[in-house]
Length: 70
Image (cartoon, rainbow, N blue to C red; front, side, top):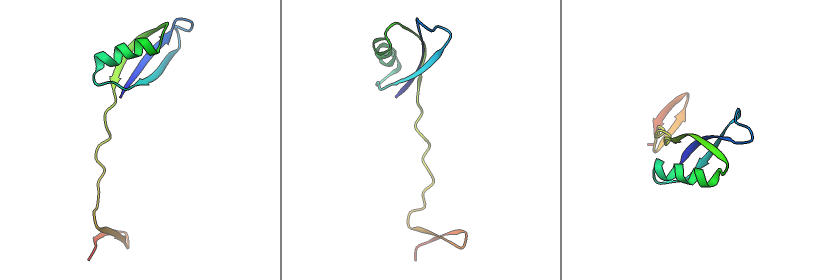
């Protein structure tokens, strides 16, 4: 997924944000050009996936502490 920053020709002072799904930034830019017709594309940025959350497999929260399941 990519975030697209663009402006419409009708409102050049207002930056808008859109999203496209593409395998790389070059294709994302081309898709954005087709999707946001009559617009100027300013920036194409890849969304970074969220970091893996800390998991406690088989743990329980007891008295304010994570404890393994026995």
